[in-house]
Image 1: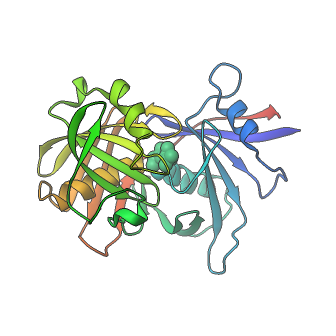
Image 2: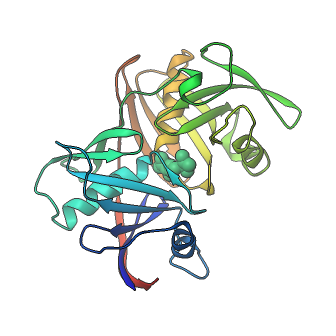
Length: 276
Ligand SMILES: N[C@@H](CCC[C@H](N)C(=O)O)C(=O)O
């Protein structure tokens, strides 16, 4: 079958977006791997599917697949691209879109400067719900990775994140520590691994080794999780600029029970068809 797709990116975290409302097709893990392959396919970090919602009062269902083929709960950069896609394809005239994900409902809004603002929902800090093995909830936890003891933050934005503090992201051991931490036995569903440098109370630098992908140029949920962790640890103010290798995001969190608000760009690169 010929499947129509749109190639997009959010700060270089790239996606193949597939409309499964007008095209009837069941995406299986081997299809995702083929589409995501940068040599034999289209190439992307995640495949995003646009579907009809299964719940009332929701506009769309947003499904997310990592390049390795696994379906995941949440993707922040993808959410902004999803909003841009829905608007550009005129699938709705609404300014604010309610979208169902595996992690719950999120709200997307295209702002006047053509950035997309996403209400990512409230972060989860309870270790059981991240899921992360720890006796009690804490601002930071000891975590041994390859014989080195780190003090890490652990946060779920619907998907699990561990945040490792570093003095300089440019020299952070992302390629060495990332894959080991991703598979750490205390994170039974594996984990996205963020390396955070606090620049000042309003600014961080971040690199993320994503679960099921490897290091990406940006991770939206990773930026949200890092800011939440920094605020809980008393290092950051409620509004923070996050500099990632692919560009910058604005993240806002007013504290316990409040949603995390992420604002940033979403870009369409090209459209095409793939024989699947
Ligand atoms: N790129 C994403 C996160 C995608 C999912 C992640 N790799 C996971 O497995 O949870 C983002 O922008 O948030």
